[in-house]
Length: 236
Image 1 (cartoon, one colour):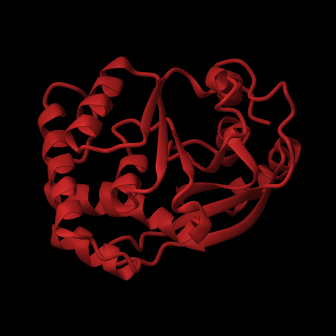
Image 2 (cartoon, one colour):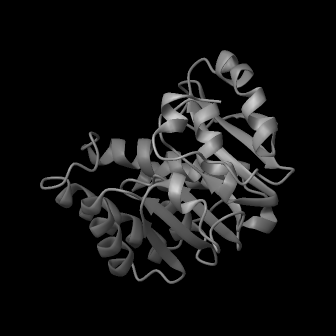
């Protein structure tokens, strides 16, 4: 796990032997389950360390220190990225994950139990529906979504879950200037304000990776997010 350990140290995070062991178990179980369930196209252990585990931990750069023991929601988590790596690294973090695919939910339940993690909740369903549920809406200090979707779409799926004063941290790659400009109206409508576009400069993660940091400055109107599929078909 040298790639992960060195990268975590660059983030100011010195993993304990127990944490390294948890990451090893996560990696092993991910690749084992991936033989039966489509969890990831990345199957080389070194690349899993770099492109899944370390990439997930890079979001620590966008998390205020006060939020590291708070409530984090990972929307569309898939195989648990970035939520589970952040939970392993920050044991005091309260983690909730949203995933709509049953097979992936079963993997998440299996690995969270195997890792012995407390303070983890898995919600099966669509973000468009769960964002209207009391106890989830505007309840989280940090919300993240690693899905490959435009900022205007991700903002509609993520901002309703974030409390006022919290942040939405969205990893992105490549040329993002046009995407950011196109999302200005959506952010304003949904109660968000882009406060930082932070470049990820970790070793092995230098291929134009950024973290968009959006502060929740106002309440999201009750009609958002719209019904399932609409944020993708008709972005704000």
